[in-house]
Every structure is written in structure tokens, then in C-alpha cells.
Image (tube, rainbow, N blue to C red):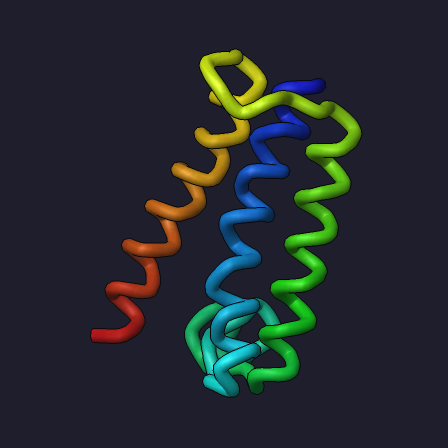
Length: 98
């Protein structure tokens, strides 16, 4: 259970970055609340709020099972969660933006 929570913590923290950046820059960006879902753009305010939710949820999961950065299995799983979601989103949005 610890590793599942850390995996999702990494994924949520990774997902918070583009939404927070888009929202803070005042730029529209795809979100789960757009139409069509994950393809259409959401407003900067929606993106900021979604990014903040992801940041808080990921941070909360990480706080439940705190691991230090370094060569530790828990931290590796956290990074793996960020890596998996980051690669998926990079491929997905690469296709959407074409």
C-alpha cells in the first residue's frame, strides 16, 4: 500500500506542474473538465485550481508515507509515478497539439 500511495503521489505532483504554470501564466490548457475531456482547453482559473488540488493531494499522500530523496525504494517509486504520468502526458498532448 505504501508504494501505491507513493506512486500516485509522484503522478499527482507531476500533473500539478503544467496546470499550475498554465493557470499562473493566464493561459488556457487542457484539463479533465474541458470539452472534449482532456483535449479541449480549460480557463486559467480552472487550471490553477486543478493544479493546486493535484499539488495538495500529492503532497498529502507523500506526507502519509514520508521518504527522503535519494537511493531508497520509496523515493524510486515516487519518481516512477512522475515518470510514467509525465511520459504518458507528453505523448498524449503531443498528439493533441498536432
